[in-house]
Length: 285
Image (cartoon, rainbow, N blue to C red):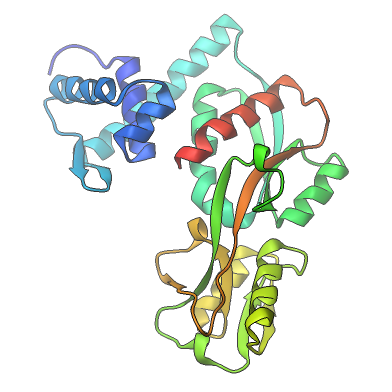
């Protein structure tokens, strides 16, 4: 191997690893797909190793790609930190961010990692809670901004991403067949709780909330036990659980929108920068 690891090539590679498709990576970094593909080939040629496996659904990393990814993130983090420190151009401070539990596992790692690579001197404090609790915290100025759920029709211009609500059950148990239907739901004022109850009432199916929890971990534990089914956003469904198709015994569920709310009408530069980051990265995840 000869030459050196170019920062631009590494940044493109990390974008591909996170987006899992060349198209999304190209959109994320503002390049054409052809340019991204050429950069990958250049990096593979430099290292004399294959880095990506191309499939019909996107790309996965080879063993060499996985090893490079760890190094690339470290190099970029130190590079960006040095640049921000010496130039004095980097954002600094503490950001208080709220996020519903069901989005945390699916989106937070990508959101926080990519923001930290750009602004390494910012400390992000994260609170995970149902949307109504996050809104309460915003009103009390206990959060700077929060990613919240909204119904499909409301605030369309501010919606960053849409996620369908789905019924979720254990793969081995037939909780869907019990009468009355046993439900594990979040707080009564949340969109998933209301959608489940209103949908079942509309088709006339008997049901009862057998388990209630404001914690995603609690709801998932109940579903895994086979004692009840739950309603989650599709992105939050773990691999060991199954999405239950709507039909005669289960009503179709609506989609919810993801949007950002602030505690102040005019957010400061740090909060505005994180908001812009959310708007840019969430649609690509």
